[in-house]
Length: 280
Image (cartoon, rainbow, N blue to C red; front, side):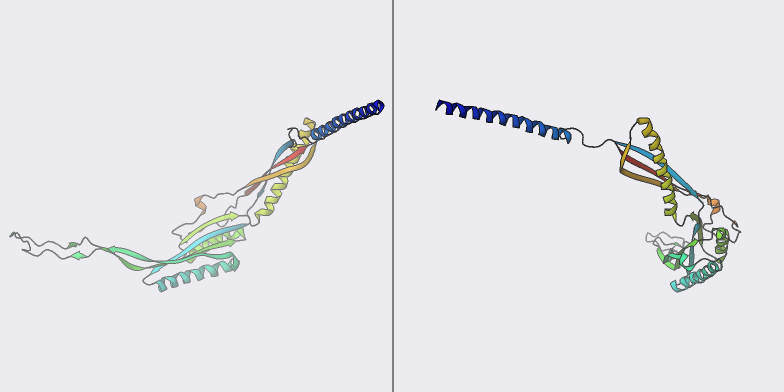
């Protein structure tokens, strides 16, 4: 009986030691996994490095825009509008002779409004002896009564038109011809690039190449290698040439000769990119 109790005691001790050993083993295993997966408060964000690049393309504008207004006034709206229509037809006919496509002529605004004039009535002179105090009063000269009013004296009709000129060599001649047709106001030209997205794409490629070139040089100096791209951003600017007022025809257009050829200048379209890589 004593031997049986002794064997039971030894078995329980052995089981206890085994449980302790297994507990220690699993604790070490779990700790290793936690440490491996960076779950002990270590930073889980991979190290990164960023490179910036700049690229720009300079291009000559291939279209120009001019803007003109036709205004006429008359006693009634119908006649004022008819006057605008006459000049408009002259302008459109002229543009067709210069090869301007109808789809490139756009009416921006049509309006008419009354023209007012402030008028005061003339009051009659004060007659002799018209006072009430027994004093003789000399007759006065006629004078304006204080209460005047606005009177409609006619109507102004107006139409604004924007023209896109694809043959930029004709800009000067077109502006000169429009001035002769009798338009009231002529502004321009504004030189632009018809498809800026294509040039923007070229500038972006140059900027990316610039950033990658910098990355290739710097990683060698730092002794690191690059992983996958974690982010990319781009910003860009389009810098147009702004022409002086001497190249523009404004209010009071005359038949004076416009420049036969107006300098188009250049546009610079740029792209700035930032590429962020993970570091291996």
